[in-house]
Image (cartoon, rainbow, N blue to C red; front, side):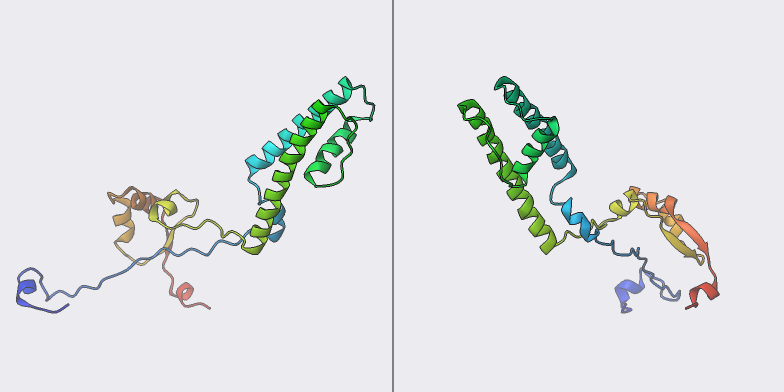
Amino acid sequence: MDIIESRFSVVDFSIPFWTSNSRFLLKNPEAPPRYWSIVFPFSWMTWLALAVTQVVVTLIYMLFMKTLDFRVGEISWTVLEVAKTILRLDNQDFSKRASFLMMVGVWRLAAFVISTVYTSNLVAYITIPPSPVRLHTLNDLAASKFQPMMLDYGSYLPEAMKTSEDSALRTLGQKLELLPYDEKLAFSK
């Protein structure tokens, strides 16, 4: 800072002052394991909706089989028949009735859309995996589970944070853990 007359009348330059900067450091979050790429193309709500859809379509299939007096076997056959549609495997039509073919056509179209969306999202996820959520603001840090720590070397900062008017700084000041200052700790390898 240059000492000029206008500043000299306001600031006492006979007392030295050092500025200090404080930083919060966090390790970058790790990316999710690669095997999660099977699950992550859809959200958990989408998986739940897909499971409910599987059950509903299976029940509708069974209702059609009962009304058409078609004897295929157990519920497991029906579940597999419905799942084969999503997996784009060959299906058999056990009736030529228009109502059944209409229901099967709608289900096959929906299953085609679901499997195409899943495949597209899977390719995108494998090609460019999503980066983990990072903290960007002090509010994010204050709301997180992280515990801020600081060496206790007599700084004014912990008390200033605890009494801050800013809610994020005040929360961080209350969560702040002061570690005893030890030169051996500071200079150890």
